[in-house]
Image 1 (tube, rainbow, N blue to C red):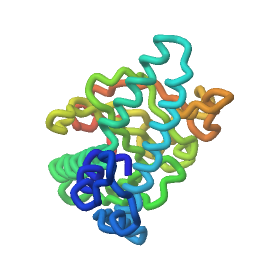
Image 2: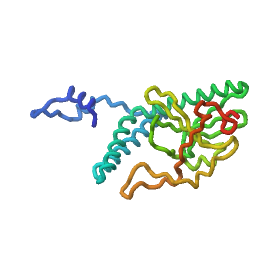
Image 3: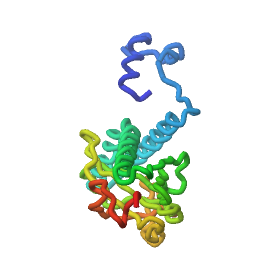
Image 4: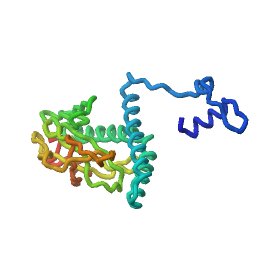
Length: 247
């Protein structure tokens, strides 16, 4: 109900009482057009779950902001809240759009290089091992975690689930994009040659939960912080002999 739009609509249908306030009786609330969520629809449920997580992050950050003693920390949390409010509506749209664009472009690359060996694509319905898609060309299969980052983002690390270490030819591909037109601006690749595992990410720093609790940010035991390393070959989506899915 915390919405200027719903408040405006409510004022149009509800009875105005003496003193200028409006009635919130059930007969008026029932008329507000709130669309029910179809939880049996995978896309609708995914959007719902993502929005719930974003709202939880916003509420936690705003509580921290209210008690922050350090001015710099308060400004940082204020910006964090503003960023979440700005991206929450379109984040899933951006993520899915970039994923489809990337997979389409990879298909084009494979088609141009080896027309007799087409790219097979399978998506993960449940992401509990750190990968989003499984890509296969000929006898090479890669479990790929896809990440998106807005052009100019200051964060220099990405979070990777240690479960990806156990997957065949596991790798991470981070797509840097321009928010103005959703065009790719660059790519970061973390992985190894086809048929080989990731470097042992289990020895890297444990990632921290983005939400700060009463005892601070708790560790995420199955997630590691990976530094971003630019792959010049990936920038042009032209596979090198070492890092190629198509090899």
